[in-house]
Amino acid sequence: MRCAKCGAELREGVKFCTKCGTKVTWERDAYCGECGAKLEESDAFCPECGAPVPGIKTAPTSDTPKRRGRRPKAAGSAESTAIMGFVYKGVSVAADEEQVLFGSTGYGISLLDRELNYEKQGVYGGSVCLREDGAAALDYGTLRVLNKKLGIVSDIPLLDDCEEKLASYVLTPRYALYCYIPEDDRIAFLRYDLDSGERSERTLNAAAFGTRKLYDHLGRCRMYGSTVYLDIYGEYPDEDGDLRRNELTAAVDTDSWTVTVLWNDREDSAKPMFYDFERGVMWTQPREGEMKRRGWQQGYNEELGTSTVPLVARRIGSKQPILPTYPVWQGMPCNERYYYYFDGKRAYYAPDYWHFYAIAQDGSNSQDWCDSSHGRTEETVVWKDMVIADLRADYEYTVYPASFERQEGIKTL
Image 1 (tube, rainbow, N blue to C red):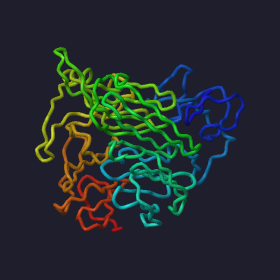
Image 2 (cartoon, one colour; image 1 turned 60 degrees about the vertical axis):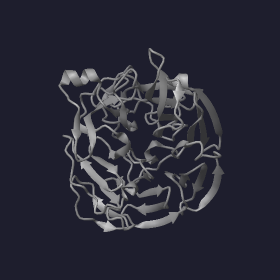
Image 3 (cartoon, rainbow, N blue to C red; image 1 turned 180 degrees about the vertical axis):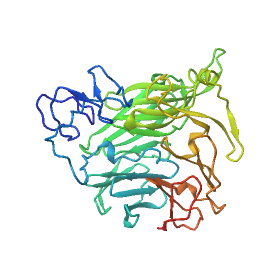
Image 4 (tube, rainbow, N blue to C red; image 1 turned 45 degrees about the vertical axis):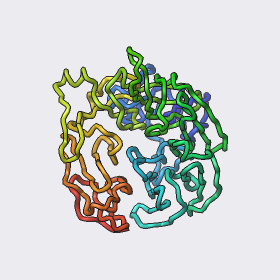
């Protein structure tokens, strides 16, 4: 039997998962952890809601008391990681039910309560995360472990010359990870375990990712569990021996150091754009055959200045079909670098520092939210049903409802 929350193998008779601390009840029948539908032993996905099945969840019984109040979180649990769609431009955000922590590479980090009142402000750090006993911040080569008051518990130097190496980095409650290119045919990884203090390094050949020569920098870097999802840019010789640009996305298991190529533009046009790791879903562009069969056309949005295609949902993996239970987002911008947020229900897009738009499922966009042409959209944060932004370029954050057209601000921070 496996844990319903993290998927770890469980020893017979244990009462709690030894990896994430989730309580275990041993019963014969298995049920989906998302919707409660009964599962067969061979089910990899729920037949009712399509959720992936990492393990089993026992059926609720009438004599099992319901938990009340806030559920405690195990350190390193997925619930306390940065919310999907947040780590863009210079801002990263971590949140739980009671508070939100956000930070930028230029203005330090701030902890707010759920009413968006400043509780504490602290040290500089680009990527941030909440932990059971405090927080952590990761910037150019240094990990800072923080207490609940955002005071520094320890400074841990991890990577020398981080900026010169053009390293991509990501932080979760469990791991800090850097990846960079030491040579044009290799990718180096450095992982630090915040729970154990263990440091591991590995260099992988570019051929393992399906390319030949690498550019000097990597693209977006995201992490869920022990797997890092990485956008890679390189070159590969064509039939005539000429080098052609090669773009791909790979998932690297940092426990076993195995590589799974999710997408390679030499073979597949379904480029991954966003991930919903909790549900095992990624949102991608369509393949050419899918566009043709469904009568979809590539478009162009004059106001946003970008080509557009539909955005569709698939299971996270290589060459997956479109999931029919998820909506198709029509007319979505092709360049993922300028999205500020996407979660399958709402989308926000900033083609530059002085414009900010909401995008609807039919591909239509809102009026420009910005009040200034000086450029401050790189500090925008989307959290729950709120947009926190400096749209007037006056160095004050205003909280707006996360609507389609901009509404009056709720408060100024």
